[in-house]
Image (cartoon, rainbow, N blue to C red; front, side, top):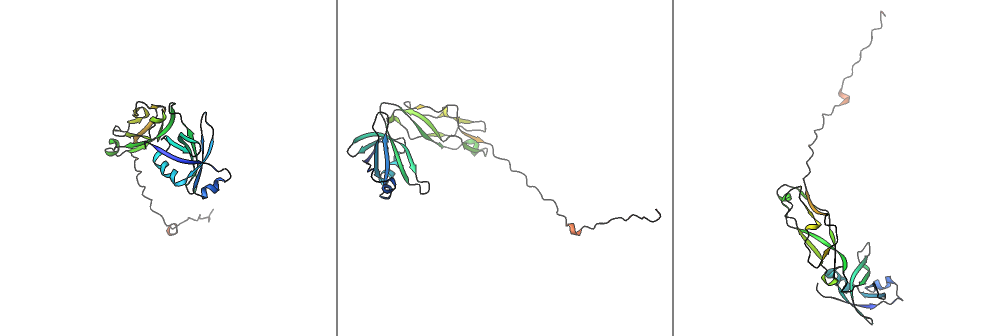
Length: 213
C-alpha cells in the first residue's frame, strides 16, 4: 500500500469509550517525541479496511479535523478478547528523516528437498525479524525460499535473508529461521500376551501325612 490516508476527529472526551464503540467509533491516541498528545476517534469500518491492507509498517497520512495532517505509524491495537473487535488504537508520530525499527513477518516458500525426498518435517523457528530504516523505506515482510534445505543438517539463518539495501537487519544474523528434521520412527506395535483365565486354573495342594510322625 503506497499511500494510506485516514481521516479522524478529535475525541469527544465527554463520552466514555464504551459509548463511542456502540456508535461504531474507535477511540485512539496520537503521540510521539516532541509532539502534543491528541485523543482521537474514528469510524470503525474505515479504520478496519485501511489497517487490513496497511498493517503496522505503512506510513499513514493522518488527517485530524481541526488540527492538521500528521505522518504516523500504527503503534498498538487493542482487541476485544472475545469478539476480536478493535477497541483502541495508538498512532505514533514519525519523522520521515529519522530511522525507525519495526518487526516484519517471515514467509517461507518453495519445497525443501529434505522434505520431498527424505520425508523430513519442515520447522520454522522464527516468524519475524526486526529491521531498521527510514519510515518511507519500511517493508511489510520478507520471503525466504527453502530450496537450500537439502538434508537434515541444512539450516536457514537470519543472515540468509535478503532485504533492500536501504534496510538494516537488527535481528542477530546467527539465529536459525528454518530447518528440516528427520521423520519420527514409528514404534513397533506390541503384541498383547495371551490372557489367562484364572478361574479355569486348577490349584492342587499336598497334605502332609502326619501319621506315624
